[in-house]
Length: 375
Image (cartoon, rainbow, N blue to C red; front, side, top):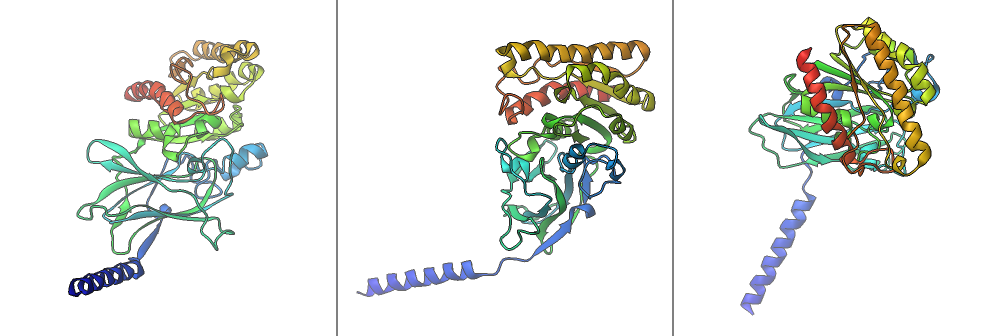
């Protein structure tokens, strides 16, 4: 009987301890606006919102669809260093949109990466972008990425913003007494900037999480800022876009517009579009990338004939430009291997999975690295 009483008392005490632990107040957080840290992969300062991707001055010059889709924060991120035991995020979405062929974690979530010493950027976690109850009008998302971190040293981190939604405000949250500062410019170096222009594929459709967008993979592997000007459905070689892009102090301009263009557009627009880069920025390299051969084009006779015609028109203009601008730092990359050896890298026959983006990055990273080394 005595043993039973002791066991019962121990169980009650254990339950009380658990109850107290659950009822214990959460340690206080400190919220730091991303703008006070180091925002990366953004091309212009004169944008309408803090994390939109083209200058406000273009609003009345471009198609409404182009303007709207440029409000997505794809490719933009924030770099910081902290000794906090926990790291989280709080942000307001522009639309809280949803697509049937893309995971919400990539569309409107965020990724946390951590720098492991002198080795590599590692993915730590991704937040699930639930709207906080009671804050539906603000479209507020708040999450904790990771806890129980080493607090004895400062560690470098990076957060990637949503790919197919916009962000009106984003804050990093850390322990209230932790130190947090802008990330080192030795990691994701701003002086090695690349500007990538293209379509929904380049924008990141349909990566399962934000760190898998092609420009973000390439950025990590080249240790360089890569500005993402992939505009879903609207990468149509608008000259006003070229005239603004040349103002960005980039070493390389990667041009990947063919998927959004017809054969006629590839034939008639390419020369004058690319010419702007060659004339206004002769110091920079320009890389023209062919459009991919979609998996179904192996079997659909129309697309099997039509897609190569678009690429052929694009290439003819490259050859004209090369002849007219001798000495220009102009490069041409074929689509061979862009989607991988088995054509198994798409969600819907066009937009890429994470595997597809890995194939894309594996093709383009060594080419861009070699070009950067020559600059």
